[in-house]
Length: 136
Image (spheres, rainbow, N blue to C red):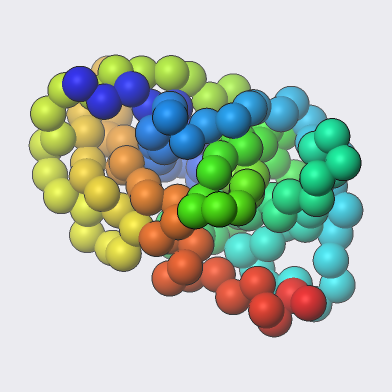
């Protein structure tokens, strides 16, 4: 069994392993960065630590989130990142996947209450689809 946190982004659902989740923020105070790549919404200050807030929809190729009302703080390798979410993320337990992920960073696909949820590897997804060097 896999314990995950399900994130809604642009009418799609993604999950991250609960072991990598640090915290969920409601209405994060975002500082925008001029000339940032589309996948970087901005940065948030979490108890003195500056954390990039990533657009989950852009990272996954499903659309765009303009003002995400929630952010999920997750560990990505040695770094902390925040993933934008359109609704309050929900914990779930997944048994067997119904398919494999098709894109880099997609681990597996699960069926959850009549919807498909893609389990993502945040570190792999960020590495393949985000160029933070362009933002600095």
